[in-house]
Image (tube, rainbow, N blue to C red; front, side, top):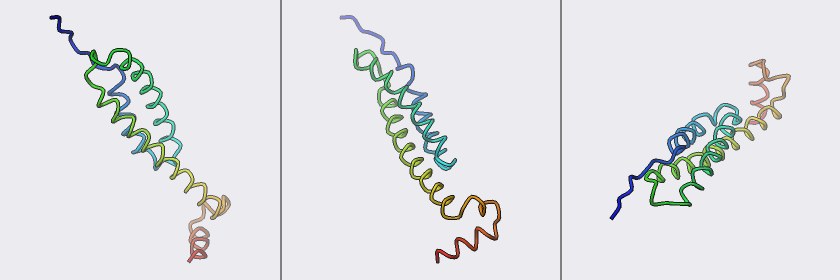
Length: 111
């Protein structure tokens, strides 16, 4: 019988790398992690469509799926980070944010 050489999905490695980066950048006020995670999910969707057409041709679907999971985790963590920073900015106040002494006084009010 004919044996077909299995190919790699073209975006599997970039999706995996972007998924990891979305987790690592969730601390950057959340915005960067969300953007990177969404890009990873868009690339995932493109490769998933290729894989669904002919699954026996491609060999690195596990990398693609792992990247998708990491991108979703990165997006969720980034959303939590973004909400936290919004809460901090609203509680401390934009006018007090640049002054460490006023920030500490405002945070002491919490305790």
